[in-house]
Picture 1 (tube, rainbow, N blue to C red):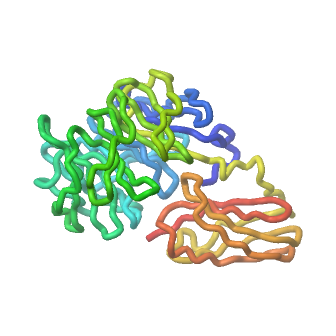
Picture 2: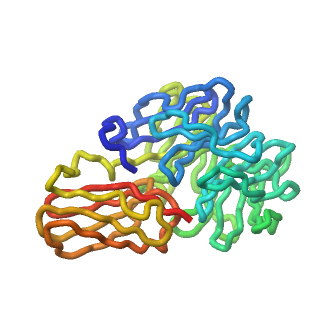
Picture 3: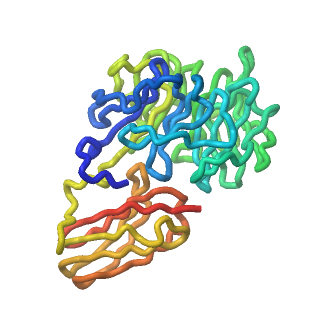
Length: 378
């Protein structure tokens, strides 16, 4: 993700959806200090439910209520509104979102008239179809796609009834329930051991289950209503919906570290979604991109499907390495090119194992580094 010349975005940030005052707030990831309302309250929109980073490097936000909440909205990283993304289907009380393995967008809906999860084309936003149908789904929240193409959904269920984690086939039809949840599941994710972690809003706890849905243990407890999470490095961040805080834990042990965003800092009210943006891999402070030094092209074709060719120029002979980072700053691929003479060169990268999305390509040479943004499509 290229943010050349934007000093304010050269840091690491945490974006938090503040449902209670209809904003997306930005905090410094190193200190927890409030920076600004990246996306301020907008007429006709209220109750933001999820802020998601897209494969194109833009932000996607779902809103549960409001006269203009029938679509997922698209914003750039400066918070500027880019327009409605979804089309061909009017959302009703949209909640959580995720990207499918093929790069499409899946959205859950709470509405009693549209109690279902639906999928939109990840590039055009055009409605694709149902991912989980009414009848086998009740007040859906978070969801995850399995390698076999099935969808698992956290169902809050009805008042007085147990929530559950359900599975759905490629036609959106309900399959077996993985597990019953005593209260209200809102988020879920896989840990490094392959266990399923479920954030329960009502219990204020994170519970651990096997991949088959068997309860293992209560991993974290004691939060005052829980919604929204982010895993970054060695840490897990959790939103305390009623306490108006974000708390930090060790992701491996669940040990409490600190209240990262203290109560109400920056006007935080009912946090329900957390997104971490780490732009440090594209920080130009250490890059050398002067003429006659190290230069890197934008790649071709770009977007690409399986292979991409990068053209580059180096002023001095020496060892070269190309490193790819995903949009969260994680290294996903490293290719050593060996000792290379000065001059113009090209390298073809096979990316068959990479998921569709945006990547930063960084060229590391003896006399500097350079980077560019490339996008893999389906």
